[in-house]
Length: 325
Image (tube, rainbow, N blue to C red; front, top):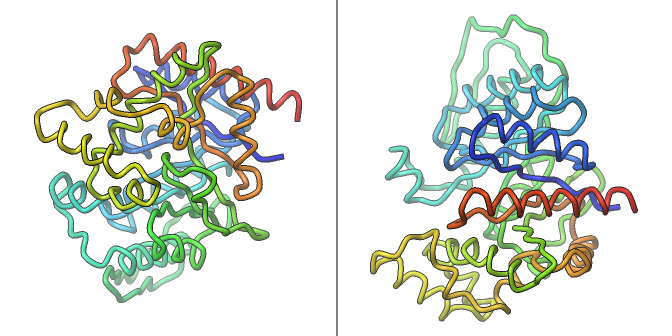
């Protein structure tokens, strides 16, 4: 049975913790902490202390905005805090986010991420000295973490969209995390023993499929306006919609309010939206290519109360599918 994971939503950290607990009780396999409006590591700590058995992961933490050593220390702390339930999910983010938001270089992202993983693993393994030379380097002598590790190895997952990043995940990581807009047909053939393939999808459930699609539309619209993803939309036949979203954004429209441009067929292609039965059928499409699906409720451009309703329906779906598995 494919694992159903949840990326919980909360307007406050207290609400987020309750959502994580509800996801655990519904039978979710892992709760994931993203990094955009909150710190992924702080959110993961909140999820870990709100739960007792579900896996806890960053999905994803930005790999270049912190030093690899700080990333490793945070991972070790979170593994201890969660009593061995933590998974470190890392991603590069896009160039503009790194350079304009965080003031860090983005050139050569594949070797940069390869070095990040190697350094994180070296720090977590302990030992003295800790040495690595590359696009990202470390040279530490006379230092040793004085706390015993909870586990000899913390699983590392990499998010990737392009073929080079996907290949890197398959080579150096313990799992791969798909983009939120990666339909089953675009999931690469990565499944093998010991490697966790995590699909991802906005999941919008409602007795009225038109309501479900409307809630999910802004999620698709947001990503359609991001220039870095334009090629994928063109290949899927939605290049004109993505171009219109980019034009609307440049004209001053909010990135969270572009759903009016997104046709139903595009929502159906990129999200899990519809009645409970329709969503169950859609989720079955992921089973042959992934070990898990990370589900998130629609939130872009929606009032908080509507996102609460959507999240409740999502968790009910997870619970119903868990009971019948």
